[in-house]
Amino acid sequence: MGWHYLSDRKLLTLSPHSEASAFLIVDDYVETVDLMEATWKLHLVDFELTLLAINASIENATCWPPRWRHDVKAVWLDIALLECYEFLTYLANERYFDIKITDDITNNLLFLLHTHSVSHCFSLMQDGARTASDDVVQEKLRKRDAGQAIIKYALQRSNNQQPLIAESRPYMLPQSQVSYVFHYDFLKIGAAGFSDIPHGISKP
Image (cartoon, rainbow, N blue to C red; front, side):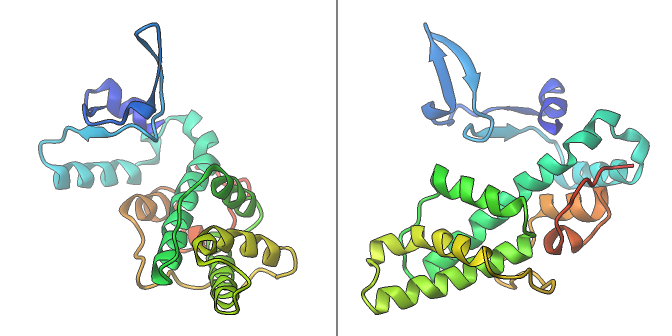
């Protein structure tokens, strides 16, 4: 989507500092590149002016290719997943738990995000962190396993907990710029991007 637009115009290029794991090499030829794993260089003469120009373009709905409307749910899911990663890491670090974002954690978060808002996922993870802390104190759980257990407890609670009333974002984790632009300027749904599940939303 946006990556192709920037790449085609040489505004975004691969950084030489990218990790080798971002590339699949076959017979000395780069077969594929993991866009999320690679490191990128953004080539902008004036970042602030460019950001203002992008925001101005967002206000003009006619500039958005029609095919992009089909990607809205996927983009929301990507942003929501990153926000959940950030909050999970915060909860673990706050309690001095080890945490590593694994494929299992990613799959479990995606499972939750298909039926829960980001706000509700935050609440479930917070409850999971409290349970993990209690279990460590009561020696029911090893501290080294507590970080990974947060999501396990969150999943258990999701089976019998009703969605909570919409809450504001945690003050210690301000909304990222990409999240703000996507929800407020592009979709124009504001805080609903945090508190609601975007079933079938699309750019008109």
